Image (cartoon, rainbow over the protein chains, first blue to last red):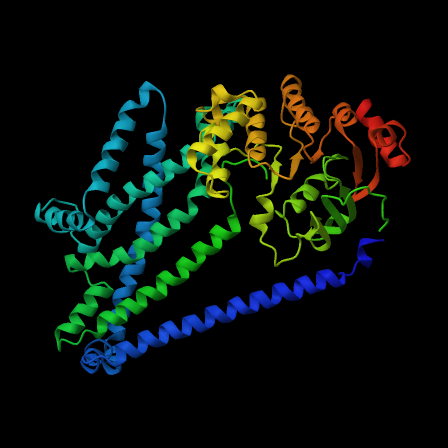
Length: 284
Length: 251
């Protein structure tokens, strides 16, 4: 029988029908339970005693429309910050990770430097770094150094995040099986070439999902520069709020941040799925 | 479907099995009966469907058509609890697939303790007895990475056997081993065979197939092209394709 002529047997058709009915049933169960849970939550909130007041203070449509342009303008600073910081963090993080994985006594100073850097900037709270750099450095009145608040905010974010990202990269580099290094060195590639052509490509693939996770986190943390007074989305919302103590602009800023981070999170999922599992295990 | 004269009801029966991955039809209308205590050896070129057949029997793959029954029960029915079926079968993989984060002993006791709910002390004494059988009781506290390939494969066999399975599936268990280590694993399988373990194994070791098989099945292009006692299939094959395959192996 040529394979083209194959048609499912009655047994198989019945199995498929059963599987379809199970799938339909679980879809129905999840749909109903989602609607019920959300419905109960919505009812509880909108029927609470203070709801009318909360609605007026946080979810005022007029206030939202009124404050939207200013908050959006502030968001543009967050986006620029996020892109510039993102690239700098990746470059610096990768450099630190490579420095830390170098072997041989001659590289000891580099390893030490990288280790101290990571310990220091991963250990310090980001808020403290922001205040130290954003308020402290301009106060030194150094010549030829930018005094713009957003610049020092960005530096603080890069310092803190690169320390985290360096550790993610290092975990990726060390997860590549030693046999891969051995195979590459056996072909005559130098240590550096091995790193560049064999180890890093595998390491980067493997840590892409956690890196994307850090990037989503960066999008939100770029809002922390508001404490320095740079007019980002959060700061703009704060200014809008100050006139009448209506907090709706904060909610507007929150929704705008979600519009940035949710697509990023979906992209992360997509990349992780497409990439599949490239772990250390053997063939199935 | 040609009914074969059987003295007993087969332990495992495969009828019209079909499995494809995308456009590639890997198994095409496969029929196979395994009697209790029988040792069935699958031979055939790489890609002929041997591994996929074993994985289908273990329900690691969802079949596209056909029926597999174990002890009279249709295990391809989606209403059947696959975990419960697998708990009664053992499978050993070509690449051992031991859990590198567990000691040898923990590898062997994992299923008895978590699936079969055997108390720890009893599970460990059973596991040690099984490791004794495969000659590795002294390595119980070692990690898989510290063992040789042959030792790892014997641990994998112990891990499959400790649950007293009704059926043992072995997928090219010696392919990753050097000839000396092949010997230690094959000796172990021969012992299991003597004790009446029902086994289906795929192999490229024709000498071993001749030695232990009750039935040899030659798979080609996803179909069972020829099956029978080793003396027939390996000694005087009917099909030209079987002859061609065997002659290439010898030369």
